[in-house]
Image (cartoon, rainbow, N blue to C red):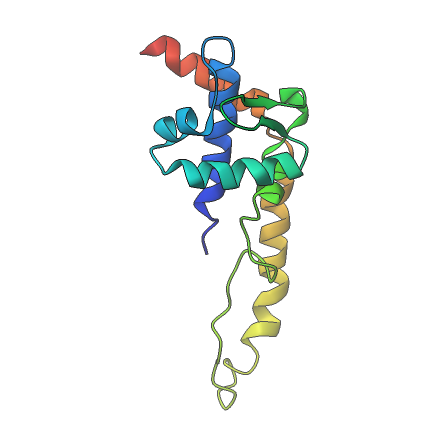
Length: 145
């Protein structure tokens, strides 16, 4: 089980956009330097966030801006926007449990409902945390440094 790093990169990017919007032109190169990845990765991610209506991107060196109030963008919105999880869910089930084993032949039916409950609980929690919450936490950490 692992959520793609696109999720944490997207959160990082949004916090950077908000933090530096008044002092820097926030381009994919600028964001890539903070995340420490190739700018192409940032550009692809920004396109996903743009498609979800979370950011606007001006081509060339125009920069990036957040399109919605920060308190209206949840971690769940970002999770959905950047397609962190495969279509079959958060948990990847092993492919071929032994059908001759009483556990192997039933493990899917035993676990599927529980794993779905866990994923729904995580997603519900993600809906309660906004980018504003993360930006606020970031500001607290910056003042400690």
